[in-house]
Amino acid sequence: SIQWAPVASIRVCRDGVTRKSLGYGYVNFHSVSDAERALETLNYSSIKGRSCRIMWSQRDPSLRKSGAGNIYVKNLDLSIDNKALYDTFSLFGNILSCKVAADSTGKSYGYGFVHYETEEAAKQAIERVNGMQIGDKTVQVNKCVKRPDREKPDTATFTNLYVKCFPDDWDEEKLNAEFSSFGKVTSAAMRTDNKGRKFAFVNFETPEEAQKAVEALHMKDMRSAEQIEKAAEGEGEDEEVGPDGHPENKLYVGRAQTKQERQAELRDKFSGTKEVKQPGGGVNLYVKNLDENTDEASLRELFANFGAITSVGVPADDKGKCK
Image (cartoon, rainbow, N blue to C red; front, side, top):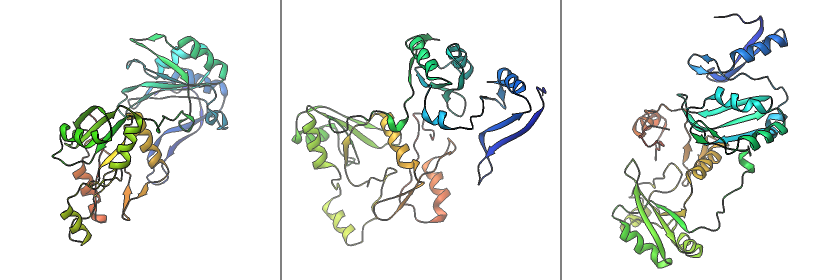
């Protein structure tokens, strides 16, 4: 390796329990000029196959937390990496940090963030780059807004419904028949996910009709009278709930959400705690950093020794791999 300058100290930040690296650290030089040279020369160089990002250590977190000077760049060409993004936006001012969001293999998600030292530099970058073609795509550049401050979608006025947990023998004709009693259904479509589970979308002509359907059908018990009677006598199986906590034997009818809304809802649901109380006194555990080959059977086997498991869910991508 090349010796750039004498180093006063190095610290790799680690998890307090597992002692695994958190993926960042601090390098302290004896002189500012040595630190500047290292930043200019080594930024975005490869360390064990991963492009590193180097920036000045900010002891005062107020600038970072305020969001001042931070911009969001989306619709990036997948060939744009951290260095290419930095080179494009460094023309407008001093950059504190610059990152293209990517998966564990380094494949870009098509968006990134650039944090400038000043608000003026960020404004200039937005004015000059927004709508410009970078690579094969026209990028959109906006001020980065923190998640809690983003405008919430209108959840009170909607016509499109998402439906799940209905009987296996339902088809689109039966779906139409069940929902048309609440108003004019303009479209109804039934789908099956990669695990064979059915779900559907039903769109009404007016929000009032959609709301009536939700109020009447959501949480409707889909079991037969015999099954309900057995459950009441303690002879039936315990009520099974899905990964989202919804009982599997009760119809789910609610406003159809975008993929981004569902992801944000899950983040909010699990960000405060690892344990979520479920109906009936159960506890739902949120497990992350799983191997992509993990499926529901292997996850159930892993946790089976610790007690009775009512349900297991492993979100998968379009290729059937664990997310």
